Length: 411
Image (cartoon, rainbow, N blue to C red; front, side, top):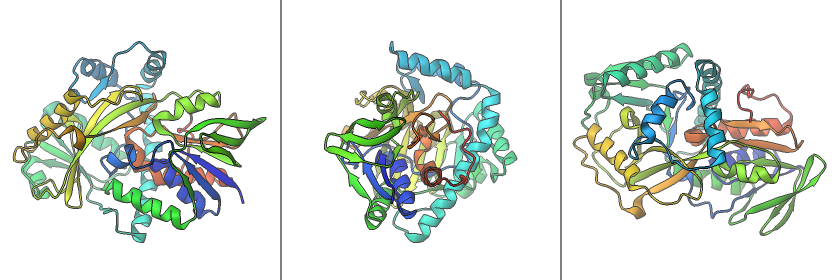
């Protein structure tokens, strides 16, 4: 039986371990942390086939430059002299065109729809993670953003997704949880959501049943090679002989890839979230407050708000109050009755979303090493795309044809 080492214990790594173990492989997961935090826990919990337009898109450069000088803006590049940032920026610029978007959209749709189907299967096994299909409301206040959202909705419809265009009154008929200060909304009816912490607890339980070994607080330091094959994983807790390696380390992928003499262009997009417990008055349908790019997700009795994309580095562990203030201001602007206050530092979560310059995830067999598969770079879509990624990695390692075409998900 093949021994597989999955490096990375976030949602991508754990879903990959789950499908590999289901296929009958002997699986070990390695993570440098205690696996109680990270992007997989504090994200907005949205499963979004609607998100078919990659971050690298026309207009994003001009918009990004405007936003760069506003520390409360939704998208912010932390200015610094850094070769990785310059290289990433140049590649992003090259990808931000209509041709790239046109090719990317069907690939992202197929991956997302497949992932949602797998979530539906998982939800049949357990209702512990509050999986619901209420769709996603894109709420807006300005004519300019309405026009953009209408255009995106039409692109989604063209690719077979179910979309409704709603007036303010129609939104209020649908969203009975609280009053909204908007001009209208676009409802993507096929989207879903869940409670991330509860899902992570569920998947860990499943891995335990499947006898997957999880090595927490274990840092992968290096590798032992035999020609173009990885033979052992070297950690601070000893050596592990393996037959296959899966690299699923998110924003930390580039530094680990350097040990393999592979270049992966990923920068962390820092995002924040906070969760209000047992909130009676709250929106009932997951929403994005478009002007502020703030995600709002009801999760059982709680409500989570998340947002901002700050291109930075993994050493940047300070909470930027200006970024947080931008989120709070947006919420109060869109939901005037909610009266949300700035969360305390200890109640504020942040995480690093692994952003590729193309805006596309990397799911591929490596070209250099015969037994290495890459599963990283999912940006804000990690939770949404995790089951599909795990299933596809399992198909790659098993030598099967993949359920979704992965040509667009290369390095």
